[in-house]
Length: 482
Ligand code: IMP
Ligand code: MG
Image 1: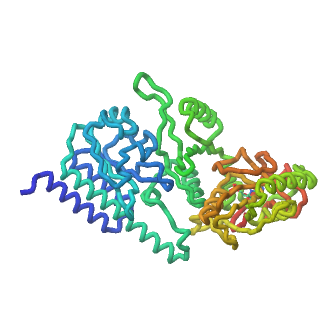
Image 2 (image 1 turned 90 degrees about the horizontal axis):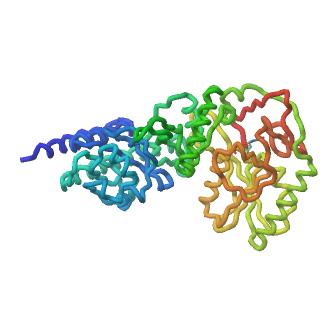
Image 3 (image 1 turned 120 degrees about the vertical axis):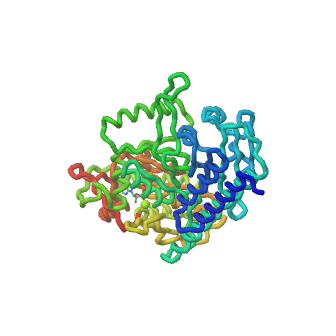
């Protein structure tokens, strides 16, 4: 005779199998799994998934856990139920006595006593885990373990199935294999944004293939005894960059308040990296894709000269000398990203005094439906495996473009990749890309000339200048090469 618990397990597995085998969205299927795991176990449950760097675990679905516990922080797979990552089940009957719990105090506050975690295994590797949390002291039985393992297996099947489905759709749309790729974390995501600008920002991140999580963590800022009285929840977390981003597209009065909170946050949590994105920065990002207030019409007029032709040439000689010294006997491949770089590249290599190869790549931003990732419209032709590569850029602004290009080139197995940029608009950096050679650090204003354009104009100027003051910057960068 089956016990009551066995009957509950059986029913739950049947319900979940039906959900996995239906046309439910992945997120819904995973929610169903988490709910149907929690109920018969008389416990809370959650599903955590690895990010693309495999160094962070993020809560993806949950049931019965308080917000403060879910938003407690990014989990470290080597600290939180670590054996799960080697495909083992972890059963902890008393969390207060166990070192495999990353946030024991918060677990205690949430009333959690015992935890059972089963790995989600895809292609022999754990991509996350299904976890059960009980308030009572429990010695998990073999039956409990096999039930949760079955549910974890079903979750892995669901993810794997959606991966295959996605892939076939993308292939049919003409994407090539290397352009397709999403982590289980990304696939399992479904988000309700509090503000439209957040959604737009998420689309931009997707475009640059930067993994993001929406509001995964709340940082306590003030306490009254044990009780938290003030918290700060950054809008986004980018696991690959270990960076939090807060959008401040709001009124100036609110920005001041936010700045205060942020200062406080940095004092209390000096180790976290957080960037504030102002309305101005955000509008410029949108303009790159042809959207937003800055993308409307065309401005004209060259303003004040920032660097004369002679100043540029002096700087280029200096950079060429440094690179030639660092790369003597190494025969580097100099790679430029078209089109803005053509003047700089031509001058730079002619001042270099060592043997070298030259190649170019081109990327473009496409608006419209299929704009899921940055498109490489021209790849390099040379084989760069095992060779030192110097990536040459005209200007680094947010760093988003460079980040994509670096990843692309690194995947070709170069022995060493250094970046040389003529201009560095450092104050606008969003993604921290390492720059080995920098010509000039420029202020946060749009510049043109010496290859750099504004809507394709001004590339032929021999100097670098600002756009004229009288006209505000109105850039439109749809279907445009950088
Ligand atoms: P990022 O991805 O924001 O770093 O953008 C870098 C690209 O944006 C550069 O390669 C340029 O094509 C373009 N860009 C950024 N700032 C300027 C500027 O001030 N003048 C001209 N082009 C710019
Ligand atoms: Mg460029």
